[in-house]
Length: 402
Image 1: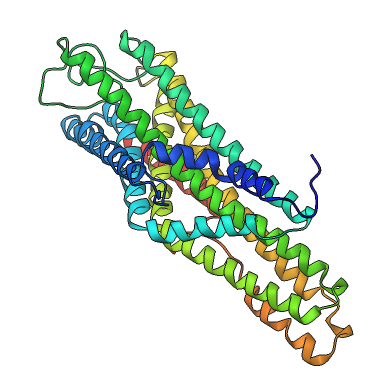
Image 2: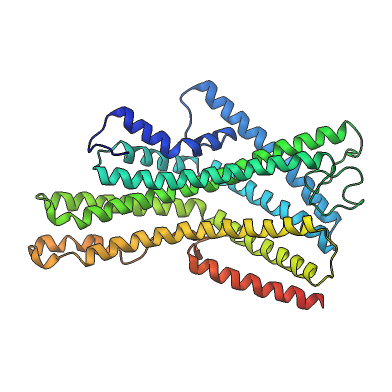
């Protein structure tokens, strides 16, 4: 739908809701939305939701899963069955901790997003921002569908139909959703039903936390990419503006603002991305080792279990690819600004005016990107190198088996 060059407050807040509404809803459910509500009651409920989320995540899932991992240590099949849940749970704890500790910085980024939408824009700039917001909503919807699918899987598990590798040692009665060890006897009723229910609730909340934080990171990066596209558009049309100096000054300030925003995002999420990098590498190696073993007919898994491991590997692969693709898109947009400044017809300007373009030129010499632990840039090149390294470790595991 076409939009006017100027639009009223109703349209502005409709756009804001379109851009961040879905992400805000997912994070509010688990109490992780960075901005504090002005309503005291709502703020208290948000803290209670977060407290419940953290307690169930740590004491219902993570600690029992780690204890179970210690008990099955040495059995490769049971360890892989355990680690495919335990490692994501540990990463989820890390993600929630980062969101809580960096709440102030993240709140300022949300304020920046809202200011960008409120600021007066031409039609083309608004269209670009809406397109990036649509990309963010698609990612959030895909994450929501994955959570819904995971919840539906719990239904047949309650009746004993599971894709897990189950033994009498790990599950003496009916199988639970994940491999975990509890102090009480879960093989009897109603202990089993209550444990199963609280596991299902905890897994749903942890899935919302895991996916919601990822989507929030995507929201921040894609919004900045949209702002860079707008800056690139303004730089291309810089010569058509009668107030060249004033417009250039605004663009320089806007570029510095975007650079600082990327630095805040990198400082906030670099440790999380490093953890996700290790998570991907370990799970990809273990799943690859297991699948190759089954293909060589040295393991014992049903077709449904083998399919579940393959789907889990593909899911982890696509998730990591998404992180790197978004990071690559950020690098691409920053390089477009670099090219726009260098290709500008500066030789037609007055020397003093042309010198002002150097401020952007110097800033764009180094591409903007997010990193994993300040070490690895999140780009498609990093993703390809990670695949090669993981495949190499799979071959080492198979060689040691032989």
